[in-house]
Length: 160
Image 1 (cartoon, helix red, strand yellow):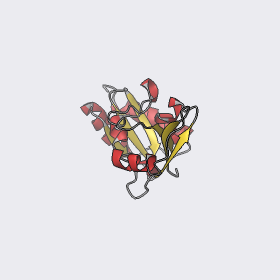
Image 2: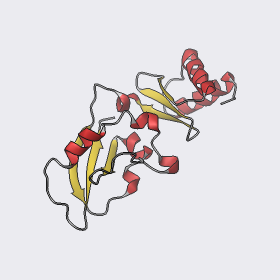
Image 3: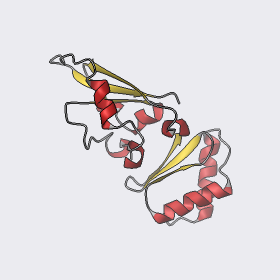
Image 4: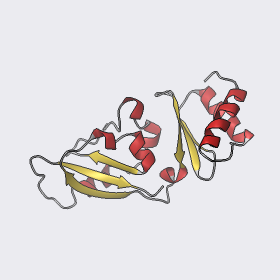
């Protein structure tokens, strides 16, 4: 973004105040501003509990709980069948709540789009989710035939 540093200091102070978090340090805002100037995707830890994801493709900043990105806090995976699956459970809003539900069909996970348009999960965050092998193990671990009016899903949950 071409907005000056003072803009980001002021704007983020208001946002963090509304979220009942202390304002970002001057150094954190400077790091964020530098990354915005570069115009590439990145994720910065700005508080013990919060990180900011820069999504230049979607032209947005995403403030999220750091535990969603922690390597030492694995996602819980559970495969099951559901009737009436909704794509609303696959996007950014679901990720921020700590519960995603991915619809899987054999061989279909490659290039799977998580969410749509404004609710799309940025690629930089998708790379922090469990990979295809783990999802497939969860989805097909019981080998049960899928009922005609059901779909196979994997629930991903994490405590936030």
